[in-house]
Image: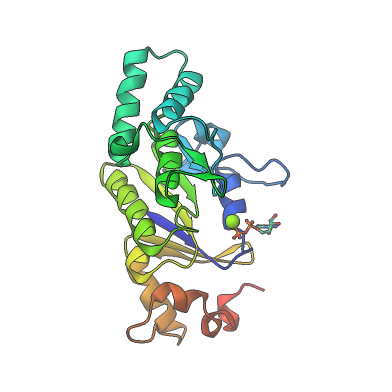
Length: 234
Ligand SMILES: Nc1ncnc2c1ncn2[C@@H]1O[C@H](COP(=O)(O)OP(=O)(O)O)[C@@H](O)[C@H]1O
Ligand SMILES: [Mg+2]
């Protein structure tokens, strides 16, 4: 599980768009490697991307939505296989109990909680059984309990072998500690890429150790780190 952390506007979404070949307006160069193998835009054959905003037809129920998605995306699979994937997704994201609930429209006809909506977005993308899952700020806009729940479900998927890459905004210390790896971004570039544990020693070496009882994520995004010249490339 890798977290992409950085202030708003530092390029988290742009990086994920490029990695998933969704960079429509932005010119990008280079190649995309998976396990050192150049794959380019073929990465989309075995990865999925959950954007920050979810778009649903509010009149559908959760089950209807997943069925609709599966029938469009997997026209070549038989219905039994589609049903198997849908049931697995509902179970993985703990949506079985609300499968017949209408999705609703935020602010107009609210039915699902924010956490359930986000879990449904993830459940829809997981139907394709991706090897790599990219999620843009899956916890933004959720309260801490719902955010933790979403992250715990992602952690479960990662333990079953899925590679998860999440951009994340203001994670709690509990949420940031779920990640094994961390990318810190500043002005469109990597400031750090390594294990979460080693990020603590990394800032120590910059003479900006994480203060005792302080959330490392808050510290990394705080002014005491960002004024440090060596932390920024330019
Ligand atoms: N590596 C880059 N080179 C040039 N422009 C970039 C780069 N990364 C991001 N940008 C630009 O910076 C802006 C904010 O990026 P965005 O990815 O939305 O940030 P975030 O998701 O971290 O809030 C966008 O206008 C984007 O085009
Ligand atoms: Mg963004």
